[in-house]
Length: 99
Length: 318
Image (cartoon, each protein chain N blue to C red):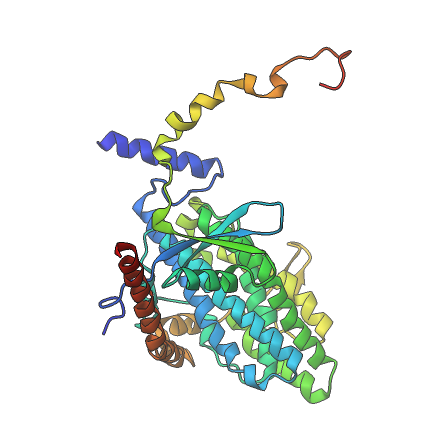
């Protein structure tokens, strides 16, 4: 019998790892697992075999809401014409210190 | 409608041209998607089947240290297979279908894993030559144009340099040992040299997919360029070990600054790729057995997960 005929894949999970205290969790990849506990345990084996982390988050991939790559312009363009949000936009006379 | 398709293709080509990465949700031509799925899944299968020739020696490793290192290496390969299946899934491939293609013999994997590991020196030769060749290919693939594949390659390269060193270390120990041990190392080199050269794929002029892969920046170097690079780096290492590469024509070419070397037997390459290597049938058989033997574990985990969900719903409605 073909494997895929009577089989459904286990849910897909996205894995986030905090490499050390003080840093945020960073996306490292994904994996398949039957439930959340197995996802955490598999994530430990697959993504932290060399002490890459001290904390793992797993999120079922279907629960992630992503922005649409086709909407890049309308989402992010409004920020590109506002250089006054950056400190380098402002000229400070050389005589003025600590600003 | 036609125009919109054209616009999307222009954007795609621009991203490639700018050396940016293509990401999963971007529009991409079907040919790019298929090429990527084929390459990534073949790579994943190679990692998985690649565990078998080495697994053959776990129980017979000559010391606890060697055994622990070999186990760690093989576990890495399982991990690398998993990173790669995940990367293939981001392109819409179905993991179960990919695995089925491997198990039915429809999918290809690296021809090198269809050769047997006859002595402990073979484990050294695999680490040194086979992982060495794989690293050469994978370092290039860190810069591939598909984001998830590139990220998987960065992780894999970081982990794999220990694989090559542990192999070299095995051979170095043998070469500094008794005459018989050194002969074992030489015998392993004799058998693994040409299959290692084959790992880079056919000659550029005979390679079906090469031109498109280079054009789409999936690959950054051609098969022949990588093979030459491999020979150039490996020859001095063999000299250090004091064993001889089995090639009468191997010679440093002052003019080109590279080694001249003999081609592997390409008929053998195609024969092994098409299922007729020494171990093809056994590899697929063992994979299928592992899959069948693990079925009850997967079924139990699925049943447990479903039960937990039902329990949760019941508690919430109470």
